[in-house]
Image (cartoon, rainbow, N blue to C red; front, side, top):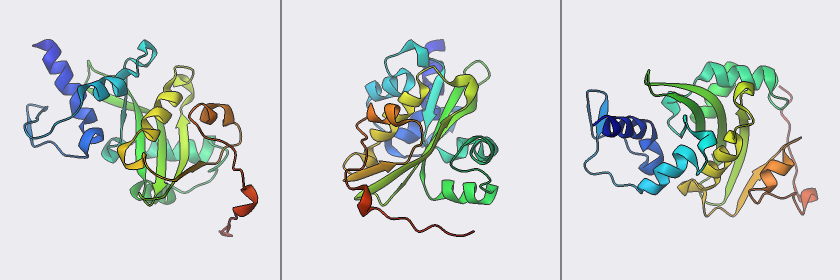
Length: 196
């Protein structure tokens, strides 16, 4: 019975990934799923990705789990690409993106603590931009960044897009492991920078 309760608790934080559905019924902090089907092997993969190094972590696209203050603090103070970004801009960008949170899963206290983030800006048909990807310092070196990318590029709404881009100053090696490459026609791309 204890194992069943733990499995139900883990599913409660992951169900959003599998069909973007909300629970049909909640009882005693457990989700009762009657009409929702999902592939349990996917659940296992997103729980551990075949590595014991990732045990105890969860990745979810549920925006209600995000710690906006942690995300804003990292982006505006610790990242090289979003220094000084306002809280309002971070909040608005999250509202209009597919967001992936990485969480330390404290199963004893039924608490998730955010340790990483990434978001996708997309039209859902031809193009996606991966941005604002990070794992906070104490949790680096455990494979969480790779696992996060694995989850993002295999997300069902993104699989068949023609172009998936990212800009990075220092993580080319990481992204190349997932098939990203330097733009072959970088002179075709232009940018309009807002003065504000």
